[in-house]
Image (cartoon, rainbow, N blue to C red; front, side, top):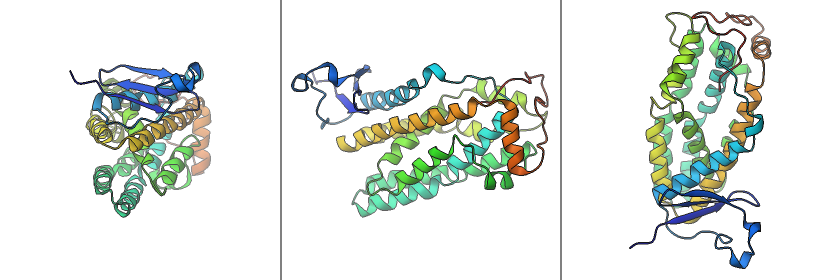
Amino acid sequence: MARLVTEWVNVTSDISIIARESGEVWFHTPKSMKQNLDPFATRMTGLGSTRSTVGLLDGAINLGFSRIEKRLARPDPTLAGYIVALVGAYHTSVDTPRNLRRAASRFKELGRPEVAAYLEERAREETGHDRLALKDLRALGVPADRLVAIFIPDGIKPLCKRFDDLCVQDYPIGCIGYSYCLERIAALKQKTDIEKVQAMCPDGVDATRFLRSHSSLGSEASHVQETIEFVASLPANDRIGVVQETYESALILAEGYNHELLKSEAEMLEELEQALGEALPYGHSSCPSHGENPGARSVA
């Protein structure tokens, strides 16, 4: 009988993620064993498999979010929070095609045409997603182009910078981990999540284009699976780099989302209106339809 694939990656100074082809995943503390007795003290070198690779990738995201679990904000959705989220969605998507093509060009220079082809395909698939966010903002009566030109939510700025930096590195393999982290989180959104947002919108207004596209109803699930299969086919050093960046991106994503979610609806409205220099169509605690709770806070 063939031996099951086991993969492991050290993601912090004292925690490794271990995943097996059987689906088992656990976190390992190297300090709990003497180094010469610890089979996971050295970097892995073997082949990957899709089941062990997804265990590493999703384990990295779970570990990243667990760092803020005790202070993770879980507010109810509000329209102001959704507007902020759409602005953030615009900024995390507008430069994605350019950044991925930049990383693809570097891998061509490095003689890695398979990685370049994967990134170029992702760039094509992501083209135009920023326009979906703009359409949703316009549908809500927001001066979208002016708002995104002058306002980036504080919690989103580190995420955008991270991706920019990753894609200009000499060996930009980490950009795959960043992209996987965002797509995997997006794929968790279900039909009920979209329905909750739609219920906040004025009657007859469709402002969920971006959300639908970046949810389990859109292409995210297939993108996630394709990425898992591609990463599993990479050499061990590349898989290590992707998993490590998935963890780092999850940390930034969790902190950034939490930063925005901890704000009150009034604080978010004030930020938006200060940026615009004018009042939004919907004032504080004025959910425009469907009787939603006016005192709730924003969505992720």
